[in-house]
Amino acid sequence: MFDFRPKLQVTIPQTGESYACAIGESLLKGMLRLGRKGIPVGCVNGGCGVCKIRILSGSTALLGPVSRAHVTAEEEAQGYTLACRVGPSTEITLEVAGKMSKPFSKGIPEQAAPPATTTK
Image (tube, rainbow, N blue to C red; front, side, top):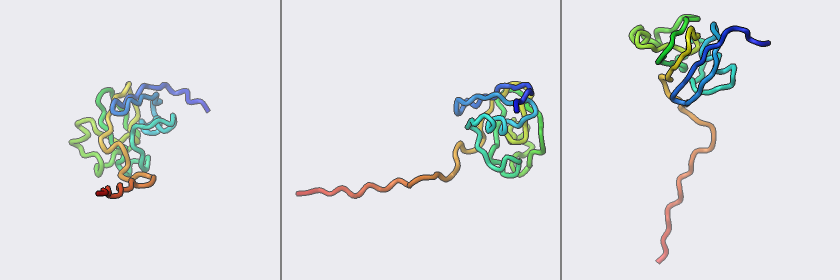
């Protein structure tokens, strides 16, 4: 099904990522719909705070309540919000507020090199 809603550009300078997000769609869902990366993904429902961002330019529309456990009133006044709870009203430039990667990684941990041996 094609989404006919108008779309606005969202840019994440930290990662160089840019994508089109529909008006009425959350910034996080717009990114996920296109298979893009840049904003960390958690519960996608406002409960975990993983997708915390700061709006650098542009304006957003609130799509659901933003938990004060993750974004204080002071932070909100400074442009912080949750990407899963806001959609674009204009073109957006944002920065990710938290860590850009998860605190764990899949794969084999690096092995320590064996001690060097010397011969005399």
